[in-house]
Length: 471
Ligand SMILES: [Zn+2]
Figure 1 (cartoon, rainbow, N blue to C red):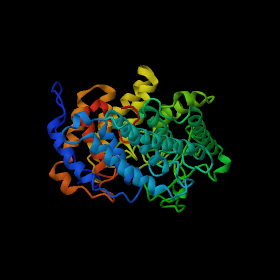
Figure 2 (cartoon, rainbow, N blue to C red):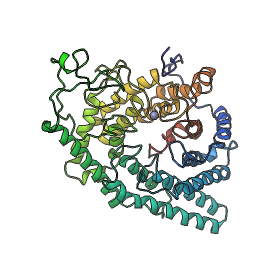
Figure 3 (tube, rainbow, N blue to C red):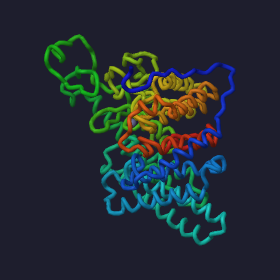
Figure 4 (cartoon, helix red, strand yellow):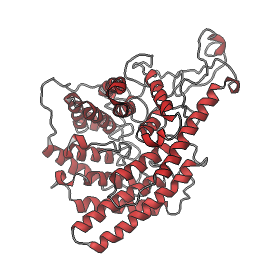
């Protein structure tokens, strides 16, 4: 029995069969999950495992309020979202923003962005119900949140921010700017193009700096470098059994294979949470800001091609197996992960985005790669770590839904619905681990709540929480 995932024994798609969401059943499940999620603690403020992640989920669901009736009302969803958002705002009030304040998923930025979205939707609802003064008050609070969010851009662009990735760094901040831009009402404040440009500039400069440093062999002590074992416990051994002395024939020059290179905590991660996958996903959605930097568009496309060369099989060996290693360079995992944070699931989002951004001809190899990654998700994405979106089954479902949106192929919708239903079955309920934060957005039930609302609202409107911008 595989350790990380349930073996997929679900029936695959039979061509020609109609595929549709069972809305009444989805609403029933939604009601049950909503009751659980409303019991989530509001002690921690963050999007990833805290109160504002729950606020985000409730806002995300409120978008589909017509299709969710009678399982939930707009007043209930937005009222609870406000409560969680306010608790999170209080939670960060005494924390200095210079410690990851710019982080969308773990810091102040996520709290301000979500609170702005919640207050915006609540103001619109109040206006519709003739409560003009309440609407006005909410709009004032919304503007304050956007101002706070925008003010974090100078920290995000500065050297105080050492991270370029999505979870703690600049790319997450940029995705937050895009979410606000796309989903706040007309007339609301926005983060200015200049502020976003400054952060994009910092990401590109950082990626070029690190790639340049790696290209300069004089800073690297040896032209050959090895680690053992090939996995998270790797150590740079010297001895003949595991180290450099015993492997003189192998070649792994330390030059840099990509014009942009990123690290998190000293490691060149590849995945959507901490690595190149998430960074390129954000940059591809800021084409004007990238185009304004000479040569940056070419660098982004070359980095994208490099990511494609890292494709491997389920044993971590090079080949078109739809899997991706956790780290860039000559790194090999013995068994690549199939998570949003690390591995094929995150790659689906990047490659679908690349296909959309580059157009039918240049994008075709990426759409094909996205589908190979989707096949890996179908085979190994019934994760035992719970229902969350970071390394849980809801994340896998969102990847399958993204493929459905990108290709129009009913196969991916069928697979997504099979995975979503698997979370209701005995095998998952009895066999999945309970995450540390079982009701949270990235580890637990709040992700599943978003997913059920998206299924009821129509799979075309599905969006991986706080990551996919267009929905
Ligand atoms: Zn994860």
